[in-house]
Length: 164
Image 1 (spheres, rainbow, N blue to C red):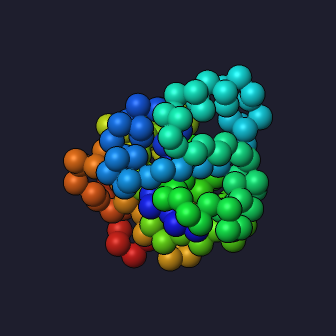
Image 2 (cartoon, rainbow, N blue to C red; image 1 turned 90 degrees about the vertical axis):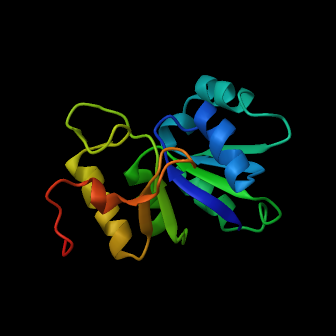
């Protein structure tokens, strides 16, 4: 498994990923691990259609994506892994997908979420999931596009305590 970027972006595959991140990390395969998208054939088809034909695209449930990534099937690819939520990322980690870094991209506003940056809105459950990943040894940073300065996700939290 050659993960070149592991990112949470609730838009999943979109222009910013295809035009900025794919060339930046030289990915030739995108894996989307998200139960909601995997269960929607029309959205899945539309998302796959937006990707250039030279790239491999796999859209699966979190559990199925983990199983795929743990086999040798994608070993010859440079994989950009996308999660829709912090819960997806935590579930994949708990299912045995050992990744060391996680990029917070776009997590848009929704009911019960607070704004932490112009592109990151998190609910208390999201914060708990990110803390669990961090405690497991995952380095979590916020960076919308490659040209942005990478920051620790903890720097986004107002009144943060380093001991948290």
